[in-house]
Image (cartoon, rainbow, N blue to C red; front, top):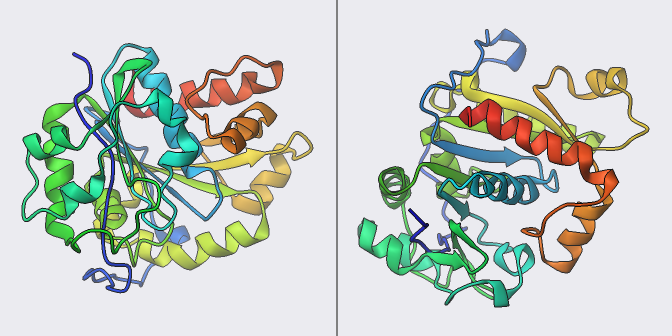
Amino acid sequence: MPNLFKSLISRDDDEEIDLEFDLASPENDCFEFPPDRRDNQVLAVWGSPSSGKTIMSVKLARYIASQKKNVILVLADMSAPPLPYVCPPSDLEAETSLGNILGAAHVDENLIKQNAILHKKNEFLTMLAMLKGENAFSYAPYTEIQARELISELRKMCDYIIIDCTSNITNDALSAVSLIESDAVLRLVSCDLKSISYLNSQLPLLLDNKFNANKQYKAVSNVSSFQADDEIEQIVGGVSFKIPHSDEVYRQFLSGNLFAGLSEKDSKDFRKSVSKIANEVFEL
């Protein structure tokens, strides 16, 4: 059945989320089991700033839709709404905002359907996102209640949900709740010292029991051809996935057309990494 929804989110960035964190254990002290893939439905994509969260979220959603499986892509960023640089407006049906959903007293299926964004070129893809020019103050502030209701309703409406989270989970209720409520988390980090520094600062939060470190897949992104495996291992430690740099993907990002296909030779390994992640997480 084709997708039935639209995109956007909203919240008050000046109001910190009412979440309590246990900051006791470093990652090295956390015994990790392999993530359990049974019945995975919701994947939250999180990482350091500029680590490729939106790119991977879009490409994973596109891959799943290409398998003729319904997928909902939630773009959670309210500071720099991704929709304008994800695809051309001409590829979308009437644009409605995620802010209408989260700003409501309660979230239900009809409200989501009324505010879903459909992609004209892919009947299996639906998006929920903030619109161009909107921000956290464009709609009524929301709480963890609406965020949890949204994810709960989406589970009833679609087989696969990809949530593109923001990096700052202490100020973004939807991203924080998504990391907690999701079945799996793809945790991205770029192979540079600034990205590693950000990740290290956030690890005490992510290792709190409510975030369940055992469901987090570690991935290093935008890996250049000159970076050897041993160098990556030394910088970021053990990872489940290595996502290579692609000039073609970068050009799509610059032109605002990330849902376009990848055909160039230099994108071959990138395409393989997308399919590997999707199949590992969801057992497609």
